[in-house]
Image 1: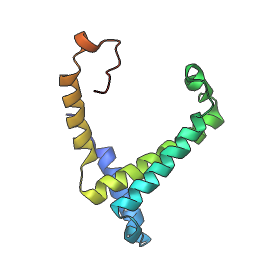
Image 2: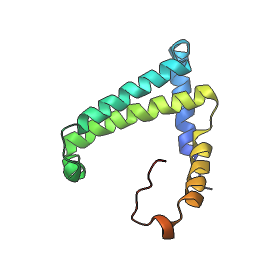
Image 3: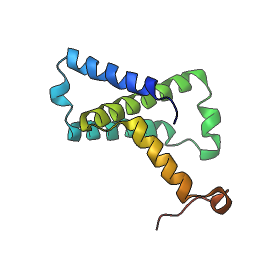
Image 4: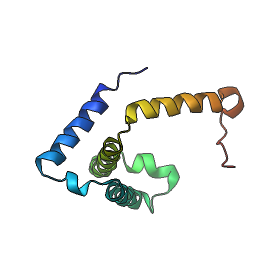
Amino acid sequence: MANHDSLRALTAELREFARERDWEQFHDPKSLVLALVGEVGELAELFQWVPAAQAAEHFSDPARKERVGEELSDVLTYLLRLSDVLGVDLATAANAKLEHSRARFQPDEFHGIAPMKE
């Protein structure tokens, strides 16, 4: 298993940041989910009219890269706060999900093929 100390440390820092400002009262699961969705929307807005084939190049521009980094950081922050409030060790959960996906989507069966939702 990979070392997830930095993710856990960031979660602890975010918890302390909220505690120092007495913001825990606002960080109920519903409010955090809504904030997360809002931030994902802001991230999506940056990509809205960028052709898919040009997205990576578009965001290689330093100013655009910084802007997308801000939105990605907001998404990560709310995701970590939500997992913390719900008592989910996100690093462990993500690792377990990856292991499940490795077993489910074998390379010889899914190589170059996007799995379809059933």
